[in-house]
Amino acid sequence: MNLANILITGSSGLVGGPLVTKLLSKSNLIVGLDPVINSESNEKYKHISNPLKSVGEITSLLKKYDITKIIHTGGISGPMLANENPNLIIENNIFFTMYLIEAARIYKKIKRFIFCSSISAYGELAESNTTEEYRFAPENLYGATKASCDLLLKKYYENYELDIISLRLSTIYGHRRSTSCFINDIINSGIKNKKITLPFKSDFCWPYVYVDDVVSCIEKCLVHEKEHFYDYNISGPDFPSYKKIVKEVSKYIDNLKVNFSNYNSISDRKLFSLKKVKKDIQWEPECSIEKGIQDYIDNLA
Image 1 (spheres, rainbow, N blue to C red):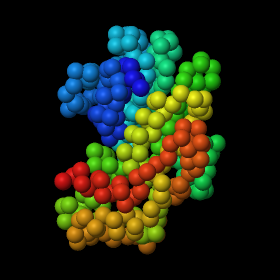
Image 2: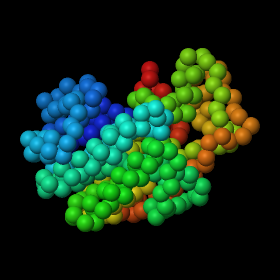
Image 3: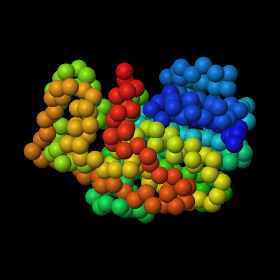
């Protein structure tokens, strides 16, 4: 199936980068938006690093490149970033998303808009197997921006007949990740032969998803032709404890120096239900924590 012309925001990032690579052979043209240059060298890839700061500029770009599908992975990607500059988070995550969807509404030729939302929109996810009806209660500004955009896009989906899919992604890990997460921190401390102390007990679990599963899910949503709902929870196939994660990393990195705390200093996030995405989109994750960590470390070699 030819996917025609696709706009990918955050096209040099953890998710956007591998998406560009995977979709190039299946599309006429990919236009990537990212301040960081993507190293992809292909006549079917056009990179734009200059920021677009208005609905008009984005509408002009959609028309210029005859864009028919949008994958919005870009923005400030995590609660650990830019907290000293909240306006930057809001501009990148809320204002730009609204410019993008309003341009899509005006342009009228977008056949699918995929938004990468986040588990952070839910906030503390203290109950297991929750559905997409779980109420948003973000605990930080990043989560609040994701929740805001998710709710606003849902109104565009309902009121303006725009084909939008929001993917509420749990914590993504992978070798291209440039921001901190505890799996990255464990691996990097081992490579540097440094000790790391984690702020929770060894049996503390977390809902991770490997980047390859995220990319495969987005591709599946992009080509999905049957009816669908607006929102879907996305996570990995398992719910590993950090004891398990350290055990898997230690298979590839000798003499890990990992200490655990005597109490959990961060809020729980349980594994939410993936029933809806499995039923509607016919997608389910394949990368267990064992497979994901092995692939992560192999890609560092």
